[in-house]
Amino acid sequence: MPTFRKLYRKVITSSTGSFQNGLPKGTYYLTVTYNYPVSSFAGRKQFIISTTSWMGGKNPFLGWAYIAVGIICMITFVIFFILHKTWKT
Image 1 (spheres, rainbow, N blue to C red):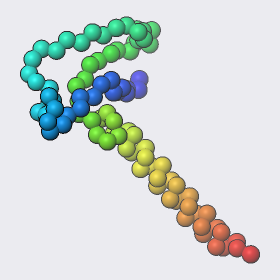
Image 2: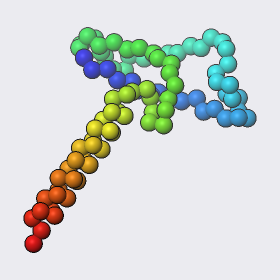
Image 3: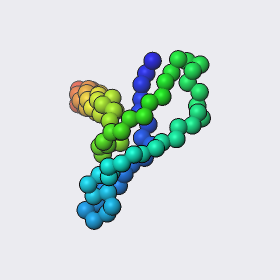
């Protein structure tokens, strides 16, 4: 079964704001609703607190997919460039 993470919320930090050192210590409560049933395909839901990057949540697949597509585009460009120079009239 494939796994993915969906970014729900982001805490905006600033040098002068109330979250300048992250979230303050304390007890936090989260209400999870059953909007999408996962029991029909033996799925499960989890709550993960994580950091984000400029691409969103922590998911290495997306970065590797960008690199792979970029390499494929570069190889395709080189092949077409060579074909164009070879068969040029």
